[in-house]
Structures are given as structure tokens and as C-alpha cells.
Image (tube, rainbow, N blue to C red; front, top):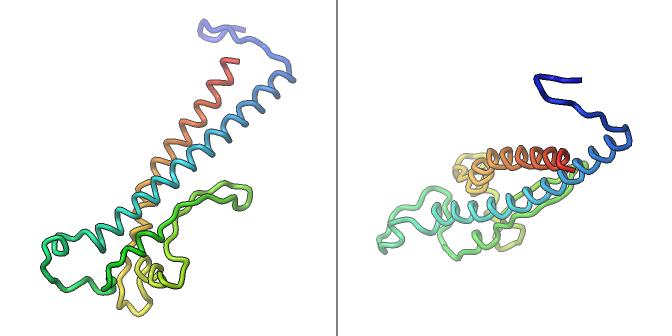
Length: 157
């Protein structure tokens, strides 16, 4: 059978199953690699966001005092930034990347700084949320590339 000058070759059902299984295996490997890279990128960006929000203001570098943003920590120890960690987990059979802050009793303020407080005294900084949002489009591109690699490799074998 010929389509626009291209000759389509037939393969056996067993070869088709083998090729699609191999493609799926390559896709999972590419996806796992993309998630691993992504979790470190999000962790780094969240730490940069926290640094910019809390530690690296021009006022602090100049030594001048300024009124802190409501809810900003007053003692800048670096514990919040140090507590930011990226990780991955399998949830419902799906591999996910995540970033979190806090988790210890000495960084109990991580969640209120990220999400704000119900009474509005602390407005959300979203230092982690901004990092995740900036990486979401890149994750989509990485996954698209992973699908392409898995399928193109399938045609080569």
C-alpha cells in the first residue's frame, strides 16, 4: 500500500507489541528523568524566591532599616530557605515532583508565609507556588520531548 509515495511496511502483531512495550518503557524512563530534573529546578527557584522575598532586599544589603512586609519573619536566620526541599513520590501510580518548606518545629512559620493566614495579617508570599508555576510549562515541554523520543526511537528499531 502506498501513501503519497511512502511505502508502508507491515509488521507482525508480536513485533508491534514489542515495539510499543519498548516505547512505553523508554517513555517512563524519560518521564522519570524529567521529574528528577524538575524537582531540583523548582527547589532552586523556591530558594531564590525566598531569598529575594526575605533575605536579599536592597534595604537589608544597605544596612538601612525599613518596615518589613506584614508577616515577614523578623529574625533572618536562613532556616526557612534551608528547609526548602524538592522531592518525588508515586501517588496513585503517577510519579510526581513536589517542593515543600518547613517540616520541623523551628520552621513552623513556613506554611503561613507561603499561603498567608486566614485573618489576613500575613499575605501569601507564594515563594514555592511561583517556583512551581514557572516550572509547569517546562514540565509540559519535557514530557512532550519524552514522548517524541520514545516514539522516534521506536521507528529506528
